[in-house]
Length: 164
Image 1 (cartoon, rainbow, N blue to C red):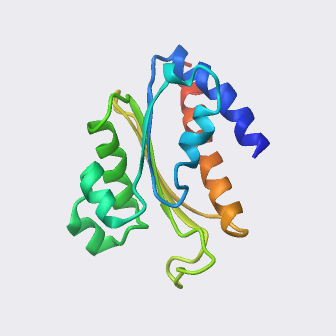
Image 2 (cartoon, rainbow, N blue to C red):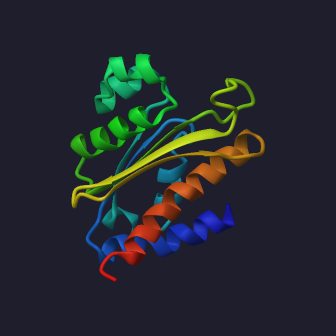
């Protein structure tokens, strides 16, 4: 938790320096990324909004995830988080987005998608994008904390390398 707070404190000024405004679309983290970012004073300068799209209906209604994508791949999938990241940008004033959907546990896992599976997508209006799936270990709280930290770390790493 403290590591994520420290990361958020470094990320905010970096977003501002690069004139980026973050928007999040979160499922399993339940707004944890938005909380971490807005815990930092001045975050209104680099954070626009959060979409907490826990249900499939929310994903469709709030950020335009297609029903066909949800049916074919499931909510915890790279195609869904790609649509979430794109939709978050389309429905906000953000310039960079992160989307997260996963299985935090303790139930809900399968052999193909065990508890701890979390899919991420990042997208920026400048054309940068990234998608990946990780399997985190630990209890529900630990999985959510690791996912929150990772979501922010990738943005931090990208912005740190931009222009180098």
